[in-house]
Length: 121
Image (tube, rainbow, N blue to C red; front, side, top):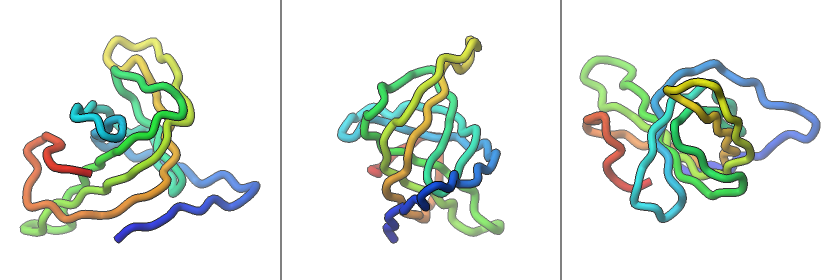
C-alpha cells in the first residue's frame, strides 16, 4: 500500500513522542545509517543520529515495528521523504537531530529482523 501525504494548510500535524529505531539513507545510496525517532506525525519524523544530511536531501527510511501478537510477523514502515531541517545537539552519542518531511510510505510485513535494515526500501 502506498499513500501520499497531504498537508492541511495552516495546521501543524500533531506530534507523537515515539522512540523507535530508524534506518535511513540518501536515495540510491547503498549505505544505511541508524538513528532513533524523537517524534512522529503524519507529515514527518524527527530523529536523532550521529550522521547528518543536508536539507533538501531525498531520503529513504525504515522504521521497524513489532508484531501485534506473539507469532505475528514483524512489520516495518518504509518511507520516502526530504530532509527539511537539521539541528546540532550537544551530545556525544547523538549529535544531530534531523527533520524529514514524509512524502510517501508503505507498511510491509517482515518475516524477521536481525537488527539490520537488510532489503530494499
